[in-house]
Amino acid sequence: MIITKPKLSLEGQIEHLKKKGVLFNIMNEESAKEYLTQHNNYFKLTAYRKNYDKHPDGENKGKYINLEFAYLVDLAVIDMRLRYRIVHMALDIEHHTKLQLLRMMDKFNEDGYQIVQDYMDSLSEVQRKNCDSEINRNKGNIYCGDIVDKYDGAYPIWAFIEIIPFGRLVAFYGFCADRFADKEMKNNFYRLLTCKEIRNASAHSNCILNDLKARTAAHKTNTAVTNELMMINDMNSNFRRNRMSNARIQQLVTLFYMHRTMVESDGIKKSESEEIQKVMKRIDRNYDYYSTNPMIKGTFDFLKMVVDNWFKTV
Image (cartoon, rainbow, N blue to C red):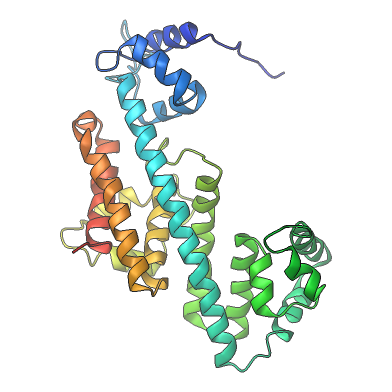
């Protein structure tokens, strides 16, 4: 039986938070109501409570420890800014993934058509139907529908990569890595799979920083990413291992790594370095909010260390 919870009024939301131990010393209740009315919704904002502990016993048992409403708001703003950068960086990675595929096609003297046909033939019946469905959804699309109509199933690679979603592009990239027996492409394929998860979450405006607990990652960090992290001055192995055991941070840092290694445009690199540094400066604005939360503080310290070393600005 599914237990449903009643919809709370704005006043009810505030009262519920107070009962849970959330404080309104920095942002008062009226300001909180305005925020929940105009800027964010209760369900999404309160997701960041996962990063805070509760009193285990005593008169405050079950209430959050030292959690101000303003802290949740600050995390939500930082998260929003970070998601924007993730999507933008993922677009850069997608573009340069396509460029790399086209370069490899030329290197191996592919005609551009057979490689796509061979990929389609490699799919199971169900996989082929899914791929066809992804492409057919673009029929009538004002941006790429004309490509679907023009080639009508006989797609050259330069057309194919423009009408498939990112997930399909990554799968096709993996197929090409095997076809060309390219070890670095194969490693990139696995890293791109990791990037895809956080890219999709950000594109759908899912919270990224609402669960920063250690040991949530399903697999170990890619070796190349780990090695690059350990090249950072003062990067302690235990610190790195603990932070990268969180699935979200592992995905985020892998995306950072892929942007750093796959994107070859100096202009794009410079621009993105400036923008991601702005996010780090936004973290610094209320850095003192997290002085009593070692999990959040440690995560932010780790991200700033990575960004300062991988995305330097002049």
